[in-house]
Image (spheres, rainbow, N blue to C red):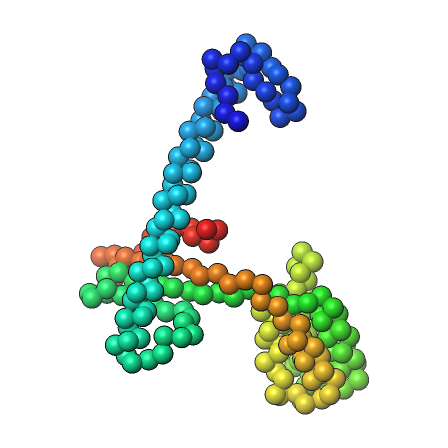
Length: 204
């Protein structure tokens, strides 16, 4: 709620009414400036939402037209980058899928891998020990999904049943709760380097 100097009382965060003459000059300034910033932030946010929708539409048009010209399938669209004719403008579409793991799958897989490391490690598989430790180490209570996915890539290199069981459990426990599409645009500067135009779309 935005409060005005003409109001006889202002309401604080606890719901109590405070007479206007008890409100300090700095509190009044904060109220005015916060109102201005919020109002203009909403305008900027609306324009960014509209611009993102336009950027998505125009990038999709380029993708479809290019695939038609190349006589290629339009399905399975992923990351792509395109340029204007003289390559002074670069546009990038980046699709990122968040990967997480089921907690029970992580626990069961870790038990299998610990058993594998304790029972079956030899000179040919010793390299995997540090990878396992690193993959299951946590930061702020969370594992690094990228490191776990890297571990899965060794499925074909280590045939031991315990390792295979652990990797199968991990694979079954993969969750992909959401996908985000990022749009970026650069302009080529006089030195030939591309300078990004900062548009923070990630939260929109």
